[in-house]
Image (tube, rainbow, N blue to C red; front, side, top):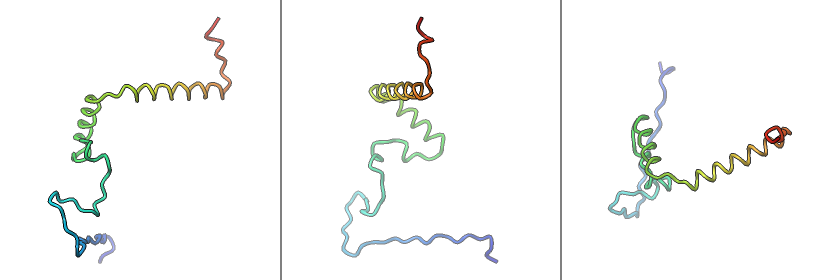
Length: 94
């Protein structure tokens, strides 16, 4: 009857008339993230594969500068929060 049946999307394969494709198969109309060539987690299938690839990538290239920057940002935000709620820091010092 067609009530519960979903309509399928139409797929178009547009090919420009005077376009000369190069040998690597790249289309000028392909939407691609600019860091796809450098990451391993983009092409993997399955949730477990993505997690294992992300963990491997994290273990390979630890960036100490980014960790230090995050630590500084967290401490500044914590101090701002303590200042906003009028927390008295003198209880830690005698």
